Image (tube, rainbow, N blue to C red; front, side, top):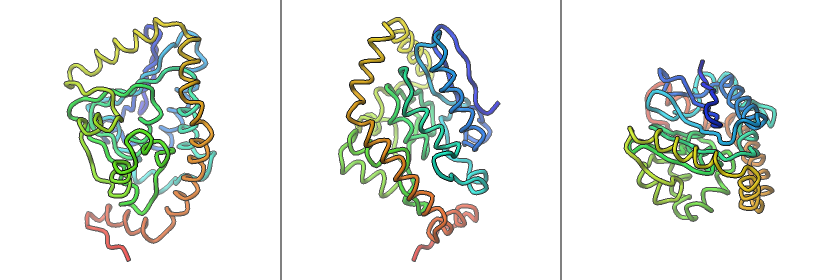
Length: 251
């Protein structure tokens, strides 16, 4: 299975599990991810959700071939369903990032409550490089997390950055050795699972209250621009260049 879902000791683990492709995400995987989040929220035995990746990577982002064949088409698309499911999740979410986290692999972290990364982790939001625009309300959330200048650097240039910089930006809570990552995340999840459900729910609700409307609005606006830009000449040139292993030439 390309998405692994399991529940153990009141913790639901949802893992990208396509290591031969660095956990690149297909449309079918987005549907499974959304379904896993919905199932975890509906299960009273689940107190905490952990999102991670198998095989040493978090996710390389969208599977390019699948993405071009099944581009996002509005709020009903599988990727939009996943984004909405994660944005509205009612239980604490911890992200464990063992390695590569590209595109949505970085932007989804902004919707998690706690983020822990291995020293080897790499992050990037190369949307502008691909002739596209930010997604998943990152145009709102990243400036809030990291400050405008750092957010602008990451979203405009789209260059990769390491786990230590992600920690300094506030995107990551803590950086750990690879062998320590999952045991530490397990400990943090167990701590949360032992706390009163209602107090955690209300605390999260209070912290997120002022962002609910702007985040939902940004997601919709970004998706509209993203879909339009995807059909534009810059994106077509960027994807062609990627497939042909050459540097893109933009007008």
